[in-house]
Image (cartoon, rainbow, N blue to C red; front, side):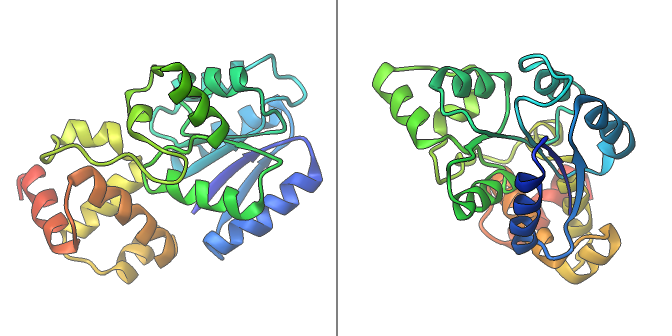
Length: 231
């Protein structure tokens, strides 16, 4: 699994890297500490990234432009914001930009890891403060997926199996690759070897695939994916 981590504080970077190793001991973390480094990292690694963890303020950034640009240029890449801010307006603005999670740095490392697992599985992490505010004010976010999400559970799958084009809007390119190999009947170990990722990462991607296909197990996923691909 490859993660882009953009933050200008070395202590935060090292702490997050250590925690990410609990998610996948073979995680490859690409670090950027400024806007220039972020742009260079994206130019080199965009197609192989599984997740982006971004701070709001780094040298060279202006407001949320770097986040909005990444959202536009890498539509399938899950983006999570790590921020020292707990301002509800900031949270709301970034969620409406289409990020899949907002994690205040005051939260515990375990909460961060749980939120990242949720996002990698296809869900959206909404901070409890924002969720409570949204429910109290009747806020309807621009991202429709957020309306069905909670702070600790993923949005449920829609009824029925989506089209292949629909899946490409729900899954990352890496998850599509996992689904393709799954449809060939390959076990997790071979999928991991073919894609150069760990078996733990394969399981995370499979959870997102099961949810997107609206299936309960591996056998149903194989049948559904083969039907979609005309196999």
